[in-house]
Image 1 (cartoon, rainbow, N blue to C red):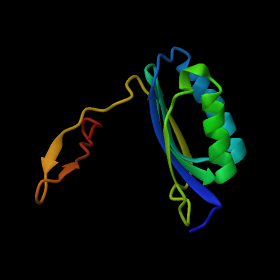
Image 2: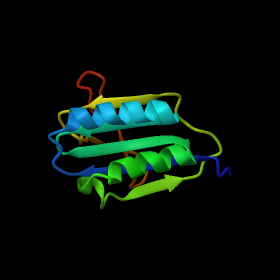
Image 3: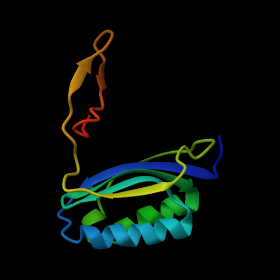
Length: 121
């Protein structure tokens, strides 16, 4: 494993009426530090899986947590060998969570399925 890269996964529910301003701020920041992955901002919070150099990911988390609304946000991290994402995608959404339709698979496990017509899982 390499200590050069980090993947961060996080979501946090908070009232975010300034969603558009946060989205613009994170895009500018992400492009400057070389962040990759997907970040979704909605009026009820943020959801993301992003990756990059350790310093880039740490700076992004620090930027978010500089706002008192995100101070208590929990972040899960991995140290991958390679960055799994090729670009940074930012979405401004009206909802943070999608509706989920579960499909049974072998045993007791469940899989999420993507429905391209409705744009939901």
